[in-house]
Length: 253
Image (tube, rainbow, N blue to C red; front, side, top):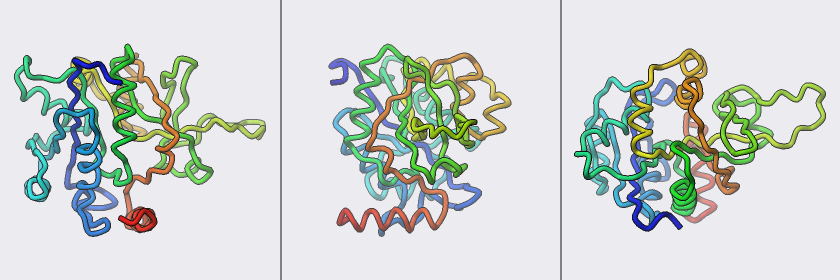
């Protein structure tokens, strides 16, 4: 269980602009806006004292408020979702800030309360300052640049994240330990605010992966493996929406 006296917030950053799917947070997925699925999962987890949608867009804010979400408006200038959630924390007086913050991507409609609760509890009970979810990668993930791969050390800390297939199995021996990254992060609150002050680095810019900023600055990112997360489908295209809706139909949702 999470520390009894720990306060944990869930924050879902959302922006309207998207190269491949403009207006993505508001895209219709099984008759709900995409972002609502992530919000409902976070709201259903029993570990979060607040679930907040952070956005710079009035259309997203209006829609989210309409289905009952707490919304905080943020600057349009943020380089990443983590920078956006840091603004939410900074807008709160220090004595009212949480112990931990979980950053939940708005484009993960299949995320469940159980996955989020397990992740938040395990992170809160660790001694780490930044963590994320990893899961076994499927064969189709390996050559898909939208599926981010990760390699970890013996302590469970990330060595590197990449859109490329890592590690490279030079001898074709049948490496079986491929892991994919699920874009959900947990931070000790002070670490979140420190992260937002770090300058962007070349690897982050090249791979377009915000977590590489932490690694390039020498941070540790604790990877919590959750096998059920392997079935999640992040939404980047209309084809992804069709795949998600097929899964939801199978669940009866």
